[in-house]
Image 1 (cartoon, rainbow, N blue to C red):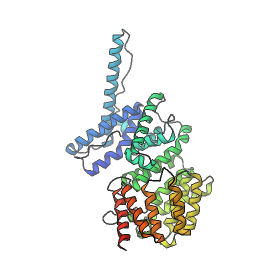
Image 2 (image 1 turned 60 degrees about the vertical axis):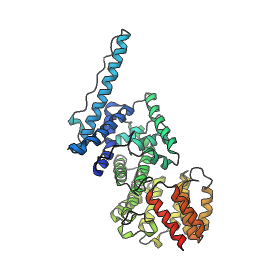
Image 3 (image 1 turned 30 degrees about the vertical axis):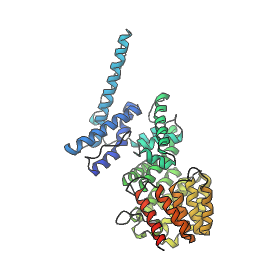
Image 4 (image 1 turned 30 degrees about the horizontal axis):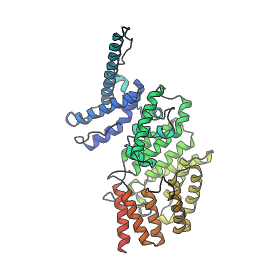
Length: 422
């Protein structure tokens, strides 16, 4: 949405409900009226009205229908105002007023339980936008991510991302190309962007880049729900299956990632008995069926890596040579410095920390990652493995200063403090 919700009066459960309903309501309003920018403003007004009224009046029996009705009324009011303005201008020019009809707010029968989020997901990947702009816009509209969270995902300043999203909206408006559900062929062309959006929404939910919470269950659940919906539409697509498998295999570790006080627990120290075996089995079955089918993409490779981790009963049983080989394949398919960063860890586990540090040195020259906290954090870990305590402490502290995630900051600071006491 275009502005944060005024949630000071709103219970936490209702706040989460509004965030989950927002893309569904926006999709329904856009589907009916076709104007993305105006629909976004109308839905924002409906969310604001809910945030102010529900604490006193209570949550309606059908909160989604309530929000759509309010947003639709706002759209109708805007359209009537625009038509009245045109008529006044026409009258001044002594022309006949245009014969325009205002669509009434949708009736209750139209609301039902139909979920327009998937529709909105494909619609946001608009043909006049570059993939990067389409993904950024979709993350804002469908994922409900803040501009800062999207900027973190793209490794760019927040101001740069704000301009990108603003230009994307304006470009759609100026293009004259309808903001409508794509055809089957257009959907296939937009699939790569749709999958990338779901991947980034899931990542932000699994490891929140900003704030006090390490994980955001609402984003994880929504990404999984939409990934399952896309797979229902495209059951034979290997990358769709790969992405869903990756989400399942990663989310399976959720309960083991935090301690009693919400502190971060890294993979090597997690209690693996807390991992969700049902999710692991489902994810392994998905990726095992997808890999032999033919063309292998980056989501399938990432899912395969996650499966190797999840199938190890103990951390020392992890097949690091296989993981290193998979990262090598993934690096050939992706120009993403984060892939190289992860491969450096695998290199260190197979060939020793100094080899991993040599690979990290090349990333220090990549402007996308040079000042990112994760590069400093991984470098600190490898220095610790190599026994260089002073260098490890310096990098742990540097990483702690750069991250905007409080649980990660606390973990990195504690690692530096532990090493300093040795």
